[in-house]
Length: 260
Ligand code: FPP
Image (cartoon, rainbow, N blue to C red; front, side, top):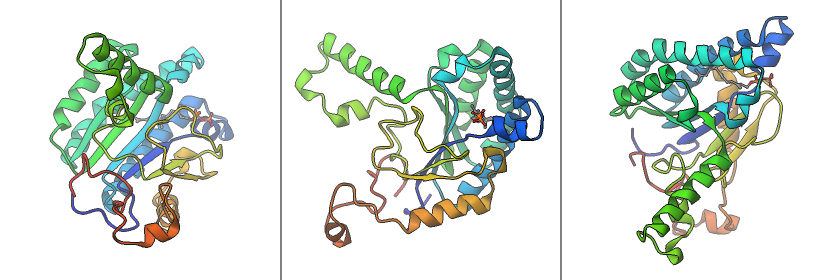
């Protein structure tokens, strides 16, 4: 990976919504939509690699999705297991580092073992950092970080007065990556739905009616073009941002995790 490219997000985060409606419109079971959604994941990974996006975070299964009908949860678990069995070697070959964020303990042993193995196999790859949020919730993530801080205080390893944004942020998921520059949600709804609540503070948001299984490089490129045309101010004024000496990184992200 090289220097950040102007107008190209370093980190893209995606809510892949609309699988169910895509299937229902074709009078097919929702599971068919999820399978089509898995194909669109590959389109998105290819796009990131081709465009020079360095990190991709996908919301695959939320903490709340466990409450869906049993047959749909079962179909999704089967799909995750199949994808883990089938796709990891190819991702590895392409230089993709895979990791999972979320409550891994809620998945069955077979899926957990495959997740661990995929992370180990791809740990040294640097072309694309792919994070799959599975049994993940932004509130869970922040609560987890708070619990970790509290445990360190209780054990005498941390003073209460040393708790600040950096200390909490360092214990949230993806702390070793710059926060997402661009967030995309497909499927027409314009909300964040408990995704990366902490990490999205200054992320540019982009919404499309396109259903996730129909996602293609043209639509992804539209999102990136729109992102490139935006002025990111991070709470400063437009004039300050225009000053080269304002100390802001060009992507607005700390230079952690990804190679400068
Ligand atoms: C939301 O669409 C999508 C999901 C809950 C599942 C996402 C899973 C995939 C894209 C497939 C596999 C992913 C990986 C990483 C292998 P929805 O069902 O809420 O759609 P709807 O709003 O139309 O009902």
